[in-house]
Image (cartoon, rainbow over all chains, first blue to last red; front, side, top):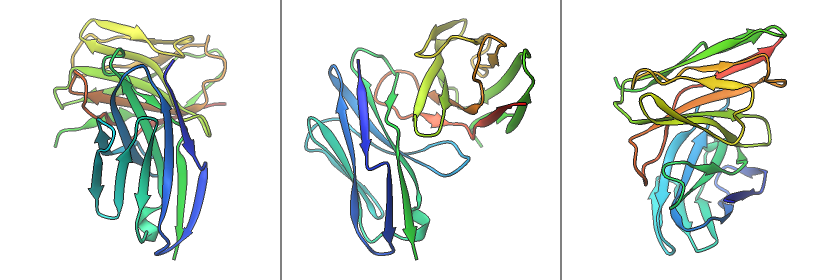
Length: 111
Length: 113
């Protein structure tokens, strides 16, 4: 069974204070790992897809990295508008297009 | 503008009542999904459909039903058999095949009154 565990559950940062969110996964053959951002009361918004260990992708203050067991979402010099819940999901080679999601990390950035 | 439309945004259900949540897309995506989101539990898959007139149960299908008569539409019915339906429901689509991220709708918040 595919499993995704995200940590911490909640993270509070000061504006400009860099940090990382963790996504640990167990999957029977990884096809892709996905990061989403979700604002309260809204649907998740796609951020990144990572396919193989060692891969990195960046978007503004966010950088996602991938190893064989986990992914990190690094947030550099965050701003209050980065406050959201960040979701990680995995897609197994045997599951077609199905995604298995983690429980998310709720990030709050204080000004 | 291409996208996914979920309606209504808020829905209230009485005990013993069936309700239907709408999901319409004009992205020409093949696959459509229904997820349920509860606080602290992430997204759990209810049903999904890869093509018209075909759908499969997800991890928590009991008490729910779906249909896929048109490529654009994938309505979800929450039946009276679903004992704890209060949740945030999300519809998603993808281009079909692997390696593509999902596009999500804005969600429907269902509350039992």
